[in-house]
Image (cartoon, rainbow, N blue to C red; front, side, top):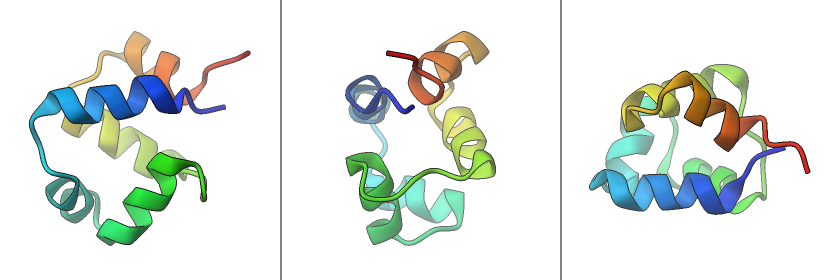
Length: 69
């Protein structure tokens, strides 16, 4: 399960615009917006690419993308 609050906070604090991140991930801006809002799920490769772009440690990637309630 995605910790959307944590992930969106990391996106905001990165200083990157969502359009830049989407282009770097090779998805549309709408696709990334839907994934960040929970309308659609991240594929494993997308989660990994976003983690790298945001400079997340492996521990932080686990907290953002594999959060267990």
